[in-house]
Image (tube, rainbow, N blue to C red; front, side, top):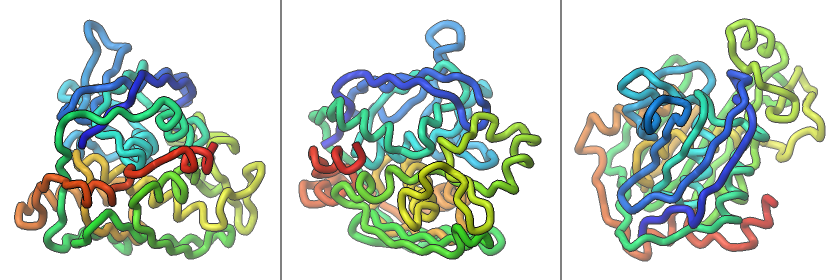
Length: 306
């Protein structure tokens, strides 16, 4: 069955790249509504933008969606991952500016708030995207791939010269709360050497050691160090789940990413939907739904990231 949140959930923070204050509210929505954002700082009833792959425009270091009128919302990936990872299929998200608040740089604050508020089951069947044929996109030495599997699986590889990161690989089945327990609190990361370049380009203006993992060679500069020894690759998987959620329905398939980022994952979705033989929309019965990322979450999952 489809779901939404039981009550409105409010957040306040700053945008990672804009550095601007942001207020955001997640509202419950009816069945078949999907996930939509609304810019409340615009005249009238605000500007609505669908959280969908074909509303994405290429951006540096984040995922950005744009309305038909050119109004944008950026850095939506951590929130989208939280919604997908807790199994929320319908929501209206009000935002009073151009960027989702970064909070601690992970999905955990969103996940905690969603699980604390509760999830409402709606009287409507849930449909998923079953992958039927392998599909792959490349850009240089970066690769993103989808292939058939009975549930959402993911594997990711990263390779950085900084010894604090190095080469990391991870593979997970994202069923039954795995996202919440294993990935949701992994923070965005960057190299100290890149910080000044990003700021000169008008990016990461709201970035701090408190909302990102910053590394310099073999050192982790952020207070408290890493939350996981392989936190960077876990965060890349978090990002990928958020970007895949823009498909508009849960995916039953295996995603593989090697040095992949937001733009490449969006290109993968575009390639998928351009090939109708590669997927089929299916109605989820109880057995299939029980294997989806947000199925079976309980208090123990909440306490794992509380």
